[in-house]
Length: 309
Image (tube, rainbow, N blue to C red):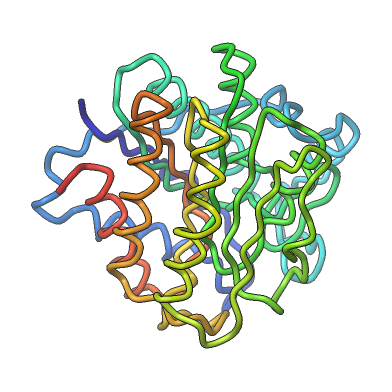
């Protein structure tokens, strides 16, 4: 079966201030990477527009309503110094929600074996009732809850290899035994969460912090000795990936030293778990990655692994 790629041009219209690292050029870099001839068999689809009912799967009613009311029709709105809304942001947010749930539907129904969703703004820092770190709604968490509620699965796993800890995803699933959240991330670093002692109410949170300047060997060890064994025991019925590529050695926002080929390696490891426990079902969603050349190379490696090339 094929790999599905989901995105939408409306996600280019979310416009933070000039010089902001989470910029529209990131999505253009992804498109350029996936325009290579070797991706000719990638099935491409536009993200449909989602709705706030999807956001409420993971976020409080009050927060969702307030964010919708705040969305500007002109000018720029500063949420917290890092996180901004422009007139195009609200549609981009809804396309992100629609994109991740459409990709999840496609994988859960067997239309496609796996999927990569390239949307922005990203999501893994968005807490139950708080936007932060460039993020408004927890896209990957919404995909997990959508799959659990619509298809009746009992266990979903979210694996986050973004260089920043996904405090929002952890917040959403802290007390939810149906979802395991696993993260490798640089520590100390924004948002200053993700210690090994943070384990969730049901021991369903698995944090593997890495020190500044650590690289592929330490990253691989964290997966082989901690994350992959825990995933095997959890036996997820759906594997979801928060695919942040800012652990790459070229990235300006952190100081890990991951090489491009490790994004291929870790994707294959997660696909192997999915083959054994989830019928091969994998949905990956773009998070960080702020050096455009590194992003292109890393996305190419990641999607190549998903496609088996």
